[in-house]
Length: 312
Image 1 (cartoon, rainbow, N blue to C red):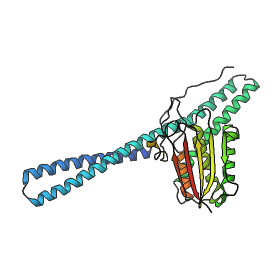
Image 2: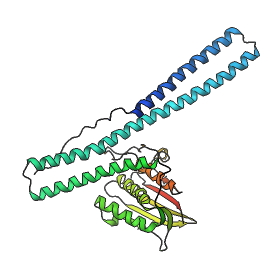
Image 3: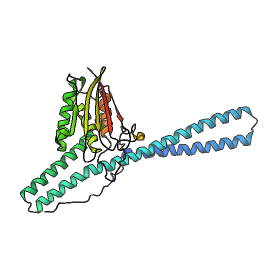
Image 4: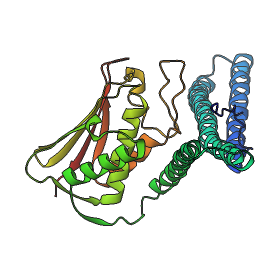
């Protein structure tokens, strides 16, 4: 039987209250900029007409003119940031729409095929495997959005305890390999013989490490080579996640941890994702008193993400 294919059309979500609020804010600052410009012109014209010889008016005009120029600069900076934020929100909505709609449409298509056609048992099992994979992808997207929402709750309680990072990393690698149907040898783990313990939430640490591994696979092409190295450095545990992927440009290194931001792909093949994985990682690691950074020698040179967490 020929493979079943379908084409999906991506639709934008309807405007939400957040969109309306951001648009009203942008309009407010735009009107403010226009008013400030008009006031600047009026002051200068008035200054010329009334008297250029009066020192008090001169000082008054210069001070207000500087204040207006400062306001205009701040207003322009805000507008630029607001435009970028709107673009990132739109990209996020498009990505989430695609990540949600594609597996749902795929599952529906295969279910309709099973219902309306007499499918051989071997092909039926293949369809079941595809639907299960699409279901996992759908659940993964929903969980990531929920995690992003929870990561902003700074007062949310964590189930803290002494965690041995070598064990946590081993379990996380097993989970990622099982989810992606990969051989465990694809990810090379290097860790010291002694225990490396930190005070943390096991579930959240696994979430952060799994997001970093998923990110490495996502940007590493058809033959990924991922290495994870755990070591002690003074009173800090350091974990290095290295990949042989497309790399990260210098201009993107500091921006990739921002919500909704996604580094542009270096090929015509779109890279799946919502732009929430790395912000979730940063939030979790910072809640554990640590920090995460990224390094890359440039495009095509691979990437290294370094997680540092204080030891117990």
